[in-house]
Image (cartoon, rainbow over all chains, first blue to last red; front, side):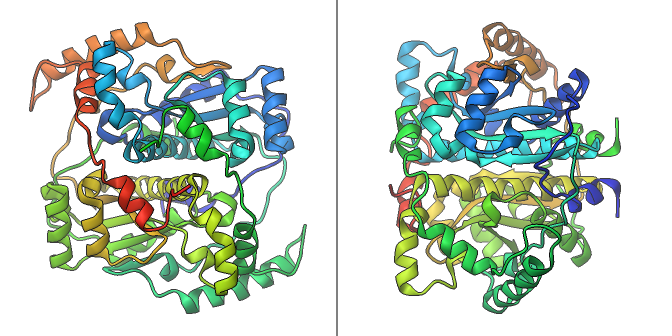
Length: 245
Length: 245
Protein backbone atom coordinates (compact mmCIF):
# COMPACT_ATOMS: atom_id res chain seq x y z
CA UNK A 1 0.00 0.00 0.00
CA UNK A 2 1.45 3.39 -0.97
CA UNK A 3 1.64 6.44 1.28
CA UNK A 4 -1.27 8.23 -0.41
CA UNK A 5 -3.64 5.30 0.00
CA UNK A 6 -2.55 4.99 3.61
CA UNK A 7 -3.51 8.65 4.11
CA UNK A 8 -6.89 8.12 2.43
CA UNK A 9 -7.72 5.02 4.49
CA UNK A 10 -6.59 6.64 7.71
CA UNK A 11 -9.07 9.54 7.58
CA UNK A 12 -11.05 10.43 10.66
CA UNK A 13 -12.73 13.79 11.24
CA UNK A 14 -10.86 15.93 13.77
CA UNK A 15 -13.01 18.19 15.92
CA UNK A 16 -10.44 19.33 18.48
CA UNK A 17 -7.32 21.23 17.46
CA UNK A 18 -4.32 22.75 19.24
CA UNK A 19 -3.79 26.54 19.08
CA UNK A 20 -1.16 26.20 16.35
CA UNK A 21 -2.07 28.20 13.25
CA UNK A 22 -1.33 26.92 9.75
CA UNK A 23 1.60 28.68 8.07
CA UNK A 24 1.02 30.68 4.88
CA UNK A 25 2.99 28.02 3.05
CA UNK A 26 0.70 25.26 4.32
CA UNK A 27 -2.38 27.23 3.28
CA UNK A 28 -0.87 27.91 -0.13
CA UNK A 29 -0.11 24.22 -0.70
CA UNK A 30 -3.61 23.18 0.40
CA UNK A 31 -5.30 25.66 -1.96
CA UNK A 32 -3.01 24.78 -4.89
CA UNK A 33 -3.87 21.11 -4.36
CA UNK A 34 -7.58 22.02 -4.28
CA UNK A 35 -7.24 23.92 -7.54
CA UNK A 36 -5.67 21.00 -9.38
CA UNK A 37 -8.75 18.78 -8.85
CA UNK A 38 -10.83 18.03 -11.91
CA UNK A 39 -13.39 20.67 -12.84
CA UNK A 40 -16.44 20.30 -15.04
CA UNK A 41 -15.72 21.76 -18.50
CA UNK A 42 -12.95 23.88 -17.00
CA UNK A 43 -15.49 26.05 -15.13
CA UNK A 44 -13.63 26.07 -11.79
CA UNK A 45 -17.06 26.89 -10.39
CA UNK A 46 -16.06 27.42 -6.76
CA UNK A 47 -14.43 29.98 -4.50
CA UNK A 48 -12.68 29.31 -1.20
CA UNK A 49 -12.71 31.91 1.56
CA UNK A 50 -10.26 31.62 4.44
CA UNK A 51 -11.62 33.09 7.66
CA UNK A 52 -9.17 34.80 10.02
CA UNK A 53 -11.33 37.73 11.19
CA UNK A 54 -12.36 36.87 14.78
CA UNK A 55 -15.79 38.49 14.39
CA UNK A 56 -16.58 36.53 11.26
CA UNK A 57 -15.33 33.32 12.89
CA UNK A 58 -17.54 33.94 15.93
CA UNK A 59 -20.56 34.69 13.73
CA UNK A 60 -20.01 31.49 11.73
CA UNK A 61 -19.56 29.49 14.95
CA UNK A 62 -22.92 30.80 16.11
CA UNK A 63 -24.57 29.47 12.94
CA UNK A 64 -22.69 26.19 13.13
CA UNK A 65 -22.91 25.54 16.86
CA UNK A 66 -19.49 23.86 16.94
CA UNK A 67 -16.53 25.13 18.98
CA UNK A 68 -14.04 23.91 16.35
CA UNK A 69 -15.32 26.65 14.01
CA UNK A 70 -13.35 29.15 16.10
CA UNK A 71 -10.76 26.79 17.62
CA UNK A 72 -8.67 25.51 14.73
CA UNK A 73 -5.50 26.13 12.75
CA UNK A 74 -7.43 27.59 9.81
CA UNK A 75 -11.01 27.80 8.61
CA UNK A 76 -12.04 27.53 4.97
CA UNK A 77 -15.49 28.13 3.48
CA UNK A 78 -16.15 26.46 0.13
CA UNK A 79 -18.62 28.26 -2.10
CA UNK A 80 -20.37 27.34 -5.33
CA UNK A 81 -19.45 30.08 -7.79
CA UNK A 82 -21.06 30.52 -11.20
CA UNK A 83 -20.40 34.26 -11.21
CA UNK A 84 -16.71 34.13 -12.11
CA UNK A 85 -17.06 32.04 -15.29
CA UNK A 86 -19.36 34.70 -16.78
CA UNK A 87 -17.86 37.75 -15.05
CA UNK A 88 -16.61 39.14 -18.39
CA UNK A 89 -19.99 38.80 -20.11
CA UNK A 90 -21.73 41.89 -21.48
CA UNK A 91 -25.23 42.37 -20.08
CA UNK A 92 -26.67 40.93 -23.28
CA UNK A 93 -24.39 37.89 -23.04
CA UNK A 94 -25.25 37.51 -19.35
CA UNK A 95 -28.96 37.34 -20.16
CA UNK A 96 -28.21 34.47 -22.56
CA UNK A 97 -26.32 32.55 -19.86
CA UNK A 98 -29.08 32.73 -17.27
CA UNK A 99 -30.92 29.58 -18.32
CA UNK A 100 -27.75 27.65 -17.43
CA UNK A 101 -26.74 29.69 -14.39
CA UNK A 102 -30.14 29.08 -12.84
CA UNK A 103 -30.81 25.44 -13.71
CA UNK A 104 -30.36 22.32 -11.55
CA UNK A 105 -27.61 21.01 -13.83
CA UNK A 106 -25.30 23.90 -13.02
CA UNK A 107 -26.23 23.93 -9.34
CA UNK A 108 -25.01 20.34 -9.38
CA UNK A 109 -21.90 21.21 -11.41
CA UNK A 110 -20.86 23.94 -8.98
CA UNK A 111 -21.53 21.79 -5.89
CA UNK A 112 -19.51 18.90 -7.36
CA UNK A 113 -16.66 21.19 -8.49
CA UNK A 114 -16.44 22.66 -4.97
CA UNK A 115 -16.53 19.22 -3.34
CA UNK A 116 -13.77 17.80 -5.58
CA UNK A 117 -11.56 20.79 -4.76
CA UNK A 118 -12.38 20.47 -1.05
CA UNK A 119 -11.50 16.80 -0.92
CA UNK A 120 -8.12 17.55 -2.50
CA UNK A 121 -7.62 20.21 0.19
CA UNK A 122 -8.55 17.67 2.87
CA UNK A 123 -6.12 15.06 1.54
CA UNK A 124 -3.33 17.62 1.17
CA UNK A 125 -3.85 18.73 4.78
CA UNK A 126 -3.93 15.18 6.11
CA UNK A 127 -0.82 14.23 4.14
CA UNK A 128 1.00 17.00 6.03
CA UNK A 129 -0.03 15.55 9.38
CA UNK A 130 -2.88 18.00 9.90
CA UNK A 131 -6.45 17.00 10.74
CA UNK A 132 -9.67 18.35 9.29
CA UNK A 133 -13.42 18.29 9.58
CA UNK A 134 -16.14 19.32 7.14
CA UNK A 135 -18.75 21.76 8.43
CA UNK A 136 -22.10 21.23 6.73
CA UNK A 137 -23.40 23.05 9.81
CA UNK A 138 -22.78 26.44 8.18
CA UNK A 139 -26.03 25.57 6.35
CA UNK A 140 -27.93 25.62 9.66
CA UNK A 141 -28.77 29.17 8.63
CA UNK A 142 -27.55 29.55 5.08
CA UNK A 143 -28.94 33.07 4.64
CA UNK A 144 -26.97 34.22 7.69
CA UNK A 145 -23.76 32.52 6.49
CA UNK A 146 -24.22 34.15 3.10
CA UNK A 147 -24.67 37.52 4.81
CA UNK A 148 -21.56 37.09 6.99
CA UNK A 149 -19.48 36.34 3.90
CA UNK A 150 -21.14 39.10 1.82
CA UNK A 151 -21.28 36.92 -1.27
CA UNK A 152 -22.57 38.29 -4.56
CA UNK A 153 -25.30 36.75 -6.72
CA UNK A 154 -24.48 33.36 -8.28
CA UNK A 155 -22.18 32.58 -5.34
CA UNK A 156 -23.36 30.61 -2.28
CA UNK A 157 -21.56 29.07 0.68
CA UNK A 158 -21.79 25.25 0.64
CA UNK A 159 -19.74 23.96 3.57
CA UNK A 160 -16.80 24.82 5.76
CA UNK A 161 -13.61 22.99 6.63
CA UNK A 162 -11.76 23.34 9.92
CA UNK A 163 -8.08 22.38 9.63
CA UNK A 164 -5.38 22.20 12.27
CA UNK A 165 -3.09 20.16 14.44
CA UNK A 166 -5.17 17.34 15.97
CA UNK A 167 -5.65 17.51 19.71
CA UNK A 168 -7.45 14.15 19.93
CA UNK A 169 -7.25 10.86 18.06
CA UNK A 170 -10.76 9.51 17.41
CA UNK A 171 -11.22 5.87 16.45
CA UNK A 172 -11.59 5.14 12.74
CA UNK A 173 -15.35 5.23 12.14
CA UNK A 174 -16.65 2.06 10.46
CA UNK A 175 -18.09 2.25 6.96
CA UNK A 176 -20.80 0.15 5.31
CA UNK A 177 -19.52 -3.12 3.84
CA UNK A 178 -18.07 -2.50 0.38
CA UNK A 179 -20.80 -4.67 -1.20
CA UNK A 180 -23.49 -2.32 0.15
CA UNK A 181 -21.95 0.64 -1.66
CA UNK A 182 -20.42 -0.93 -4.77
CA UNK A 183 -21.79 -3.48 -7.22
CA UNK A 184 -21.14 -4.32 -10.86
CA UNK A 185 -23.70 -3.50 -13.53
CA UNK A 186 -26.63 -3.11 -11.15
CA UNK A 187 -27.81 -1.39 -8.03
CA UNK A 188 -26.45 -3.31 -5.00
CA UNK A 189 -28.73 -5.66 -3.02
CA UNK A 190 -27.63 -4.49 0.40
CA UNK A 191 -30.35 -5.66 2.81
CA UNK A 192 -28.11 -8.21 4.58
CA UNK A 193 -25.11 -5.88 4.51
CA UNK A 194 -27.08 -3.11 6.17
CA UNK A 195 -28.38 -5.50 8.83
CA UNK A 196 -24.83 -6.71 9.51
CA UNK A 197 -23.59 -3.12 9.64
CA UNK A 198 -26.36 -2.14 12.05
CA UNK A 199 -25.13 -4.90 14.36
CA UNK A 200 -21.47 -3.91 13.91
CA UNK A 201 -22.26 -0.31 14.67
CA UNK A 202 -24.35 -1.19 17.72
CA UNK A 203 -21.25 -3.01 19.05
CA UNK A 204 -19.00 -0.06 18.12
CA UNK A 205 -21.23 2.48 19.88
CA UNK A 206 -21.48 0.32 22.99
CA UNK A 207 -17.74 -0.28 23.22
CA UNK A 208 -16.12 2.99 22.15
CA UNK A 209 -14.12 4.91 24.68
CA UNK A 210 -16.15 8.15 24.68
CA UNK A 211 -19.82 8.92 24.11
CA UNK A 212 -20.91 5.27 24.11
CA UNK A 213 -24.59 4.49 23.55
CA UNK A 214 -27.08 1.97 22.16
CA UNK A 215 -27.83 2.71 18.52
CA UNK A 216 -27.74 1.30 14.99
CA UNK A 217 -26.96 3.07 11.74
CA UNK A 218 -30.46 2.58 10.34
CA UNK A 219 -32.15 3.85 13.50
CA UNK A 220 -29.84 6.85 13.54
CA UNK A 221 -30.63 7.67 9.91
CA UNK A 222 -34.39 7.23 10.22
CA UNK A 223 -34.41 9.38 13.36
CA UNK A 224 -32.35 12.07 11.64
CA UNK A 225 -34.42 12.12 8.45
CA UNK A 226 -37.70 12.20 10.41
CA UNK A 227 -37.14 15.79 11.49
CA UNK A 228 -37.32 18.29 8.60
CA UNK A 229 -33.92 20.00 8.36
CA UNK A 230 -32.67 23.13 6.66
CA UNK A 231 -35.86 23.54 4.66
CA UNK A 232 -34.78 27.17 4.11
CA UNK A 233 -31.78 26.16 1.97
CA UNK A 234 -34.04 26.01 -1.11
CA UNK A 235 -35.13 29.62 -0.74
CA UNK A 236 -31.66 31.09 -0.21
CA UNK A 237 -30.20 29.03 -3.05
CA UNK A 238 -32.89 30.29 -5.43
CA UNK A 239 -32.63 33.85 -4.18
CA UNK A 240 -28.93 33.78 -5.06
CA UNK A 241 -29.76 32.67 -8.60
CA UNK A 242 -29.20 28.90 -8.40
CA UNK A 243 -31.47 25.90 -8.93
CA UNK A 244 -34.46 27.96 -10.05
CA UNK A 245 -35.63 25.83 -12.96
CA UNK B 1 6.67 18.24 -0.93
CA UNK B 2 5.34 14.81 0.04
CA UNK B 3 4.30 12.06 -2.37
CA UNK B 4 0.57 12.65 -1.87
CA UNK B 5 0.79 16.35 -2.67
CA UNK B 6 2.89 15.52 -5.71
CA UNK B 7 0.10 13.20 -6.87
CA UNK B 8 -2.53 15.90 -6.27
CA UNK B 9 -0.58 18.59 -8.13
CA UNK B 10 0.22 16.28 -11.00
CA UNK B 11 -3.40 15.56 -11.95
CA UNK B 12 -4.44 15.75 -15.57
CA UNK B 13 -7.56 14.12 -17.02
CA UNK B 14 -6.75 11.03 -19.06
CA UNK B 15 -9.02 10.34 -22.01
CA UNK B 16 -7.08 7.58 -23.77
CA UNK B 17 -6.30 4.30 -22.05
CA UNK B 18 -4.54 1.06 -22.98
CA UNK B 19 -6.56 -2.19 -23.09
CA UNK B 20 -5.29 -3.25 -19.68
CA UNK B 21 -8.14 -3.91 -17.23
CA UNK B 22 -7.89 -3.00 -13.56
CA UNK B 23 -7.37 -5.98 -11.26
CA UNK B 24 -10.02 -6.84 -8.66
CA UNK B 25 -7.53 -5.77 -6.02
CA UNK B 26 -7.07 -2.36 -7.62
CA UNK B 27 -10.84 -1.86 -7.81
CA UNK B 28 -11.22 -2.96 -4.19
CA UNK B 29 -8.56 -0.48 -3.01
CA UNK B 30 -10.11 2.37 -5.01
CA UNK B 31 -13.59 1.74 -3.58
CA UNK B 32 -12.30 1.34 -0.01
CA UNK B 33 -10.49 4.67 -0.37
CA UNK B 34 -13.70 6.24 -1.68
CA UNK B 35 -15.64 4.92 1.30
CA UNK B 36 -13.25 6.43 3.84
CA UNK B 37 -13.95 9.99 2.64
CA UNK B 38 -15.94 12.21 4.98
CA UNK B 39 -19.71 11.83 4.75
CA UNK B 40 -22.37 14.24 5.94
CA UNK B 41 -23.82 13.07 9.28
CA UNK B 42 -22.68 9.52 8.47
CA UNK B 43 -25.26 9.19 5.69
CA UNK B 44 -22.90 7.66 3.10
CA UNK B 45 -25.45 8.98 0.64
CA UNK B 46 -23.93 7.56 -2.55
CA UNK B 47 -23.65 4.31 -4.47
CA UNK B 48 -20.95 3.39 -6.97
CA UNK B 49 -21.74 1.08 -9.89
CA UNK B 50 -18.90 -0.55 -11.81
CA UNK B 51 -19.79 -1.19 -15.44
CA UNK B 52 -18.35 -4.30 -17.10
CA UNK B 53 -21.36 -5.38 -19.20
CA UNK B 54 -20.46 -4.45 -22.82
CA UNK B 55 -24.06 -3.58 -23.69
CA UNK B 56 -24.39 -1.20 -20.76
CA UNK B 57 -21.00 0.34 -21.55
CA UNK B 58 -22.03 0.90 -25.16
CA UNK B 59 -25.35 2.41 -24.11
CA UNK B 60 -23.60 4.80 -21.70
CA UNK B 61 -21.05 5.71 -24.38
CA UNK B 62 -23.94 6.63 -26.67
CA UNK B 63 -25.28 9.05 -24.02
CA UNK B 64 -21.83 10.42 -23.27
CA UNK B 65 -20.45 10.65 -26.79
CA UNK B 66 -16.91 9.84 -25.61
CA UNK B 67 -14.91 6.80 -26.76
CA UNK B 68 -13.19 6.50 -23.36
CA UNK B 69 -16.52 5.41 -21.86
CA UNK B 70 -15.99 2.01 -23.51
CA UNK B 71 -12.19 2.09 -23.88
CA UNK B 72 -10.77 2.10 -20.37
CA UNK B 73 -9.49 -0.13 -17.59
CA UNK B 74 -12.69 0.24 -15.57
CA UNK B 75 -15.78 2.42 -15.56
CA UNK B 76 -17.49 3.69 -12.41
CA UNK B 77 -20.80 5.52 -12.13
CA UNK B 78 -21.28 7.59 -8.99
CA UNK B 79 -24.88 7.98 -7.84
CA UNK B 80 -26.57 10.14 -5.23
CA UNK B 81 -28.36 7.69 -2.92
CA UNK B 82 -30.84 8.74 -0.24
CA UNK B 83 -32.68 5.42 -0.45
CA UNK B 84 -30.21 3.33 1.56
CA UNK B 85 -30.16 5.53 4.70
CA UNK B 86 -33.93 5.03 5.10
CA UNK B 87 -34.19 1.54 3.58
CA UNK B 88 -35.17 0.07 6.96
CA UNK B 89 -37.94 2.62 7.59
CA UNK B 90 -41.52 1.45 8.00
CA UNK B 91 -43.93 3.06 5.55
CA UNK B 92 -45.06 5.43 8.28
CA UNK B 93 -41.45 6.36 9.10
CA UNK B 94 -40.71 6.78 5.39
CA UNK B 95 -43.53 9.30 5.04
CA UNK B 96 -41.96 11.32 7.85
CA UNK B 97 -38.56 11.35 6.09
CA UNK B 98 -39.88 12.63 2.77
CA UNK B 99 -39.57 16.35 3.55
CA UNK B 100 -35.82 15.79 3.89
CA UNK B 101 -35.41 13.24 1.12
CA UNK B 102 -37.02 15.64 -1.33
CA UNK B 103 -35.51 18.99 -0.31
CA UNK B 104 -32.60 20.90 -1.86
CA UNK B 105 -30.50 20.46 1.28
CA UNK B 106 -30.37 16.69 0.91
CA UNK B 107 -29.93 16.86 -2.86
CA UNK B 108 -26.83 18.90 -2.06
CA UNK B 109 -25.75 16.52 0.72
CA UNK B 110 -25.93 13.49 -1.55
CA UNK B 111 -24.14 15.22 -4.43
CA UNK B 112 -21.35 16.38 -2.11
CA UNK B 113 -21.04 12.97 -0.42
CA UNK B 114 -20.73 11.32 -3.83
CA UNK B 115 -18.16 13.85 -5.02
CA UNK B 116 -15.98 13.50 -1.90
CA UNK B 117 -15.97 9.72 -2.33
CA UNK B 118 -15.23 10.07 -6.03
CA UNK B 119 -12.27 12.36 -5.49
CA UNK B 120 -10.78 9.86 -3.04
CA UNK B 121 -11.23 7.19 -5.72
CA UNK B 122 -9.51 9.45 -8.26
CA UNK B 123 -6.55 10.12 -5.96
CA UNK B 124 -6.23 6.44 -5.03
CA UNK B 125 -6.18 5.49 -8.72
CA UNK B 126 -3.63 8.16 -9.61
CA UNK B 127 -1.41 7.20 -6.68
CA UNK B 128 -1.21 3.70 -8.21
CA UNK B 129 -0.02 5.12 -11.54
CA UNK B 130 -3.44 4.90 -13.18
CA UNK B 131 -5.14 7.77 -14.98
CA UNK B 132 -8.76 8.90 -14.74
CA UNK B 133 -11.35 11.22 -16.16
CA UNK B 134 -14.70 12.38 -14.81
CA UNK B 135 -17.69 11.95 -17.11
CA UNK B 136 -20.32 14.61 -16.49
CA UNK B 137 -21.43 13.66 -19.99
CA UNK B 138 -23.58 10.82 -18.63
CA UNK B 139 -25.96 13.70 -17.82
CA UNK B 140 -26.34 14.49 -21.54
CA UNK B 141 -29.46 12.34 -21.21
CA UNK B 142 -29.91 11.69 -17.53
CA UNK B 143 -33.22 9.87 -17.93
CA UNK B 144 -31.57 7.41 -20.34
CA UNK B 145 -28.57 6.89 -18.02
CA UNK B 146 -30.96 6.27 -15.15
CA UNK B 147 -32.84 3.74 -17.29
CA UNK B 148 -29.65 1.91 -18.34
CA UNK B 149 -28.65 1.54 -14.69
CA UNK B 150 -32.19 0.66 -13.53
CA UNK B 151 -31.88 2.78 -10.42
CA UNK B 152 -34.69 2.89 -7.84
CA UNK B 153 -36.39 6.00 -6.48
CA UNK B 154 -34.16 8.31 -4.38
CA UNK B 155 -31.12 7.18 -6.37
CA UNK B 156 -29.81 9.09 -9.40
CA UNK B 157 -26.64 8.86 -11.47
CA UNK B 158 -24.45 11.97 -11.08
CA UNK B 159 -21.28 11.39 -13.07
CA UNK B 160 -19.01 8.65 -14.34
CA UNK B 161 -15.31 8.01 -13.96
CA UNK B 162 -13.16 6.23 -16.53
CA UNK B 163 -10.00 4.74 -15.02
CA UNK B 164 -7.12 2.91 -16.65
CA UNK B 165 -3.52 2.85 -17.78
CA UNK B 166 -2.82 6.16 -19.54
CA UNK B 167 -2.10 5.91 -23.26
CA UNK B 168 -1.27 9.61 -23.63
CA UNK B 169 0.34 12.27 -21.45
CA UNK B 170 -1.56 15.56 -21.75
CA UNK B 171 0.07 18.78 -20.58
CA UNK B 172 -0.92 19.98 -17.12
CA UNK B 173 -3.88 22.30 -17.71
CA UNK B 174 -3.38 25.76 -16.19
CA UNK B 175 -5.62 26.88 -13.34
CA UNK B 176 -6.79 30.38 -12.40
CA UNK B 177 -4.28 32.29 -10.24
CA UNK B 178 -4.69 31.29 -6.61
CA UNK B 179 -5.81 34.84 -5.71
CA UNK B 180 -8.79 34.51 -8.08
CA UNK B 181 -10.06 31.47 -6.23
CA UNK B 182 -8.96 32.09 -2.65
CA UNK B 183 -9.12 35.20 -0.46
CA UNK B 184 -9.24 35.85 3.25
CA UNK B 185 -12.44 37.10 4.91
CA UNK B 186 -14.07 38.33 1.71
CA UNK B 187 -15.02 37.37 -1.80
CA UNK B 188 -11.91 37.71 -4.02
CA UNK B 189 -11.50 40.71 -6.34
CA UNK B 190 -10.36 38.75 -9.36
CA UNK B 191 -10.86 41.05 -12.34
CA UNK B 192 -7.12 41.47 -13.05
CA UNK B 193 -6.42 37.82 -12.32
CA UNK B 194 -9.05 36.69 -14.79
CA UNK B 195 -7.68 39.07 -17.45
CA UNK B 196 -4.15 37.73 -16.86
CA UNK B 197 -5.44 34.17 -16.99
CA UNK B 198 -7.31 34.84 -20.23
CA UNK B 199 -4.00 35.98 -21.73
CA UNK B 200 -2.09 33.00 -20.28
CA UNK B 201 -4.67 30.59 -21.62
CA UNK B 202 -4.68 32.23 -25.05
CA UNK B 203 -0.92 31.57 -25.16
CA UNK B 204 -1.40 28.00 -23.91
CA UNK B 205 -4.05 27.20 -26.53
CA UNK B 206 -1.94 28.68 -29.31
CA UNK B 207 1.19 26.81 -28.30
CA UNK B 208 0.02 23.39 -27.13
CA UNK B 209 1.05 20.36 -29.12
CA UNK B 210 -2.41 19.12 -30.12
CA UNK B 211 -5.72 20.86 -30.80
CA UNK B 212 -4.22 24.38 -30.74
CA UNK B 213 -6.57 27.31 -31.26
CA UNK B 214 -7.25 30.97 -30.44
CA UNK B 215 -9.38 31.26 -27.31
CA UNK B 216 -9.53 32.70 -23.80
CA UNK B 217 -11.07 31.20 -20.70
CA UNK B 218 -13.73 33.90 -20.39
CA UNK B 219 -14.75 33.61 -24.04
CA UNK B 220 -14.92 29.84 -23.69
CA UNK B 221 -17.13 30.09 -20.61
CA UNK B 222 -19.47 32.72 -22.01
CA UNK B 223 -19.87 30.69 -25.22
CA UNK B 224 -20.56 27.54 -23.27
CA UNK B 225 -23.07 29.12 -20.90
CA UNK B 226 -24.89 30.88 -23.75
CA UNK B 227 -26.37 27.61 -25.01
CA UNK B 228 -28.92 26.11 -22.60
CA UNK B 229 -27.60 22.71 -21.53
CA UNK B 230 -29.15 19.69 -19.88
CA UNK B 231 -32.33 21.56 -19.03
CA UNK B 232 -33.98 18.12 -18.57
CA UNK B 233 -31.84 17.30 -15.51
CA UNK B 234 -34.32 19.15 -13.29
CA UNK B 235 -37.24 16.97 -14.38
CA UNK B 236 -35.46 13.63 -13.96
CA UNK B 237 -34.01 14.65 -10.60
CA UNK B 238 -37.46 15.59 -9.32
CA UNK B 239 -39.11 12.51 -10.83
CA UNK B 240 -36.66 10.39 -8.84
CA UNK B 241 -37.69 12.15 -5.62
CA UNK B 242 -34.87 14.72 -5.23
CA UNK B 243 -34.81 18.51 -5.09
CA UNK B 244 -38.61 18.89 -5.17
CA UNK B 245 -39.05 21.58 -2.53
